[in-house]
Image 1 (cartoon, helix red, strand yellow):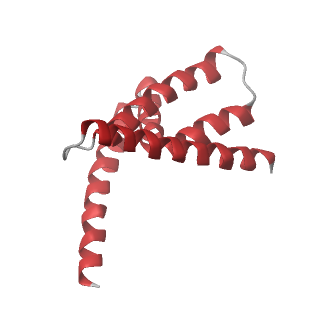
Image 2 (spheres, rainbow, N blue to C red):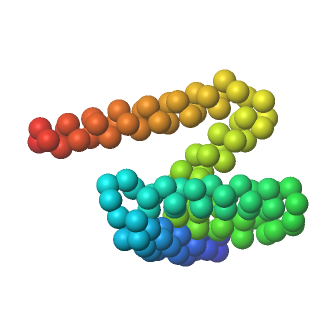
Length: 124
């Protein structure tokens, strides 16, 4: 129960951080390009890459704290970082076909399903 509680708190903090950073970046640069989302995804990927290595291979960290940071905070901050670290892990482990499938399917399926949801909402 403690682990779930910490993941929930960290997830809330990640979500609020994403909202703040994305809003700040969009106000700063404005325009039609989603700079806020790009900055959130980029910083989330940098953070998850660092913490993934630091907590798994380099430093001894309580697994509950690791889950709170990686799943909770960064999961709330950006799920793109989870997608990126999973794809990276597959590549690192030599699973090039699986990594490629994950990258292609996630992106293409995501775009197709956004379109499908949009079409369904338009027709309802």
